[in-house]
Image (cartoon, rainbow, N blue to C red; front, side):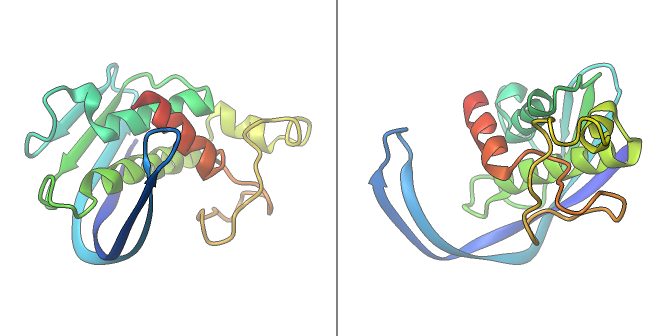
Length: 175
């Protein structure tokens, strides 16, 4: 199954860079606005091998691409095998222009993989929503209002993915 997502660019209306944190990153405060410029990300599972197809070269090494890192983090966090994922990236957002294209593309990959898993009814989804394992599963996390779009059939109070902070932590580990 193919799943397509738009990955919108953003502009920083304000940006304040704070002191360096113990993890080496800087604290930042920003006000961002989404703009009407986007990349199109298409994800297809079960292709036999992990592949990135891009309309323009974005990284020398495919494994360094944020889309591939996001896919690896998704599979590691959900405990599912990828069985090969092909990510097709149609770039419209200029590379390294400060418009958040890479981050937006990675988020679109996560949304597409989540949507694909919901439609396919994958085994980890069944484990999350079965009545016997619903409360013991590490994937059953409180739903964060307006932060995660919820399909109508998902029980209230349960999200299909780990919390954004857990996914972000896993993503930083693969960086």
